[in-house]
Image (cartoon, rainbow, N blue to C red; front, side):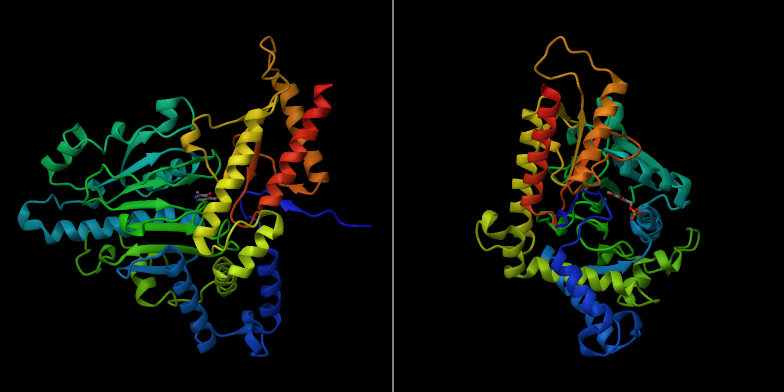
Length: 438
Ligand code: PLP
């Protein structure tokens, strides 16, 4: 019997390149000929410290991170960053306000300091929820669901309340001497399949941009200098769950010396403490960081990138994010095209400009697109979607069910998904369609 090749379309934890898993297996038993598992090394050992530094350097190289940014490894996933951002940047802004006291800034209470959020999907909405829970003065400057009826696009930046310098919001800030601590957005909404095709630029330049790149980091180049903080949970494009990378501009680290009156930053969430200790304040998630480093190696290795394409898909020698972005565009373009051409499938995100290259949500309906009289039937459509997921599974196409909050189908095609996997999915889509076209 032959085992069918598996293609994992899960949204996260997501596919990890096979060659990376094989290298990790070796390091698991005998890390770089130390005779012990990486799991047994002291995090204070030279070998681990070298790995810690290497992983940071690799990420710097891959994203071209300027020297005035710190790269730190933290635990607790994306959800922990929802809170860390609030604590760290309010502490920083509070300190700034105190320093500029003479200029008449309002310094009374940290709960007055505004924090601005752009909501384009369920992850940015969850970040808002957490900031509110912590007592922050949250202002939603753009709510795609309100503006568009559902999370299916990104309202033009010029319509955001933070964009107009003469608008009520910014005039009010100025009058009160209050500058928001940050402007927050999520670059790629994993559940809804909405991805930013631009970096926001119309807000007050004194307000640092904070970005959740959990599900699209390393999938395309990014100009880090435009951001105050970029963070990402690892379990999509970086490696296994358990570590998050945080890229933070140095001057946004509060000193902690002027912070009486502000809520204290819990040590494990404190960017300054983590940065000062080179992410070794406490025992780090060593295995996750090791795997991340192997994924970085894989991206930076021309031979591995060539192998990822195989003879059939190889175009030219590219490494790092350049290799990823080219491949990701080809993969996403052909999948959306197949969905457009299908009789039964509809991409959830109709605005082509903001369709995610990483997560492709779509619906299947027995009401054919080429039949103007067809009437959709919810139960029938859901049965058809369930059949799609089950048959795909039998073909080795795994985890295609949409997020439990929205249903439907979602194909996640992160960096580790080869172009061939997308072709196999498209082929299956066509076969599935034939069954129902009789
Ligand atoms: N942000 C984004 C964009 C995500 O996709 C996810 C999880 O899928 C999260 C945050 C939450 O991450 P975690 O489960 O690591 O807390």
